[in-house]
Each structure stands twice: as C-alpha cells, then as structure tokens.
Image 1 (cartoon, helix red, strand yellow):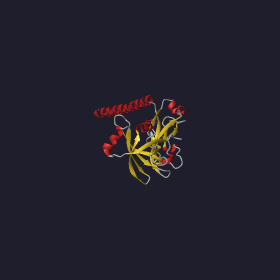
Image 2 (cartoon, helix red, strand yellow):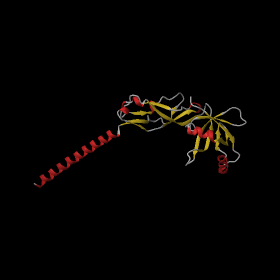
Image 3 (spheres, rainbow, N blue to C red):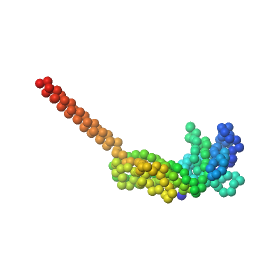
Length: 224
C-alpha cells in the first residue's frame, strides 16, 4: 500500500499575496483547503512536510491527510493544484481538496515498465519508445493506483503496448475510452533504421536513374 503523508496545517489569518509571502518567510507553504461541502479555507502547511512529499513524488495525485488543530481526527485530502517556484523547483502554494470514499477524480498514474531483459526486441538492440509516461484514469480518491506496471516480456521490434494491456483495479476506468491508445512501442535500433533508410534512398535513386535513361533513349529515338 502506498505511503500516506500527513500534513500539519493551520488557518492563515492573512490572505492574498502579502499573506502568502509572510507564510513563506516563516517556513510555511500557503494553500487553500476546499471541497467536502465546506467553504474554502486559507491554510498554511509545514514546509518540510510538503517538500518531502514533493521530492518523493507523492504530493500530486496521491491521497494524504491533514491534521487540523482543534479538530478531531485527520481529514483525507488530495492535492489538486501545486504551484512550483520557477527557479528552485519546490512547492510555493498547494490547493488541497477534501475527499472521501465516494469522491472520484481524474488522475494521471505513472507507468513503470518491467521485465525489459525478457523482451527479444530490446535484446536485439531495440529501443523502448515511451509515448505516455502516465495514464489518466477516473479512480476513487481513497483507492488511487500508485503506479501501473507494464510487462514487456516477449515483445519484438515493432510491437506496441496499448491501454488494454493495463489491468485496471476495480472501480478504476480510463479517461480516454474511444480508442485503445498507445503507451509505448519497441522501436528498431537507430543503426538498423539508418541502414533501412539508406537502402530506401538507394532504391529510389536507382529508379530515378532508370527513368532518366529511358527518357534519354526516347528523345534520341525521336531525333533519329
């Protein structure tokens, strides 16, 4: 089961740009807590807790909980918007949504490829060409898959991996339903592709030369 982060949060007395800056100066990350039938509340989260979850890839699209002073228990939440500093690359604002077992969300679940050593195509020098590093699905907020594992055992050069290859947990469905979209392909090695391209160019050049010779012969015949 995926690790669930618990964020300690406090209400923010000051809102707006000035209030957000004041929170950051005091080592907090400003944010907003909304959903669950309650009014939105300006909050601030402990900077070290938020950055730890972010660096470990658990801040976005992962179930978490918040510990609110004066309230019993911990509320399940999920980050729906994370603003990141353009230079430091760390969260500077987080919007959290209250969720429960009835809440369904569209989330992007990362894809992990396994058993690459058992793919004949990759053994021959083929390249795993990843089209989608994540797959968007509708899932219960309290049961979001942590990762989708895709087995490439037995795949040859030219084979493709499509959405139907993913075993979706109960209650989880693809966002895209009108086609069996491609997730990855086993592409030919670059050296092989170059050789094929050279052969094709040579064949095309040969055809052009043949057409030119025929044309010249026809012109000569006319002159005679």
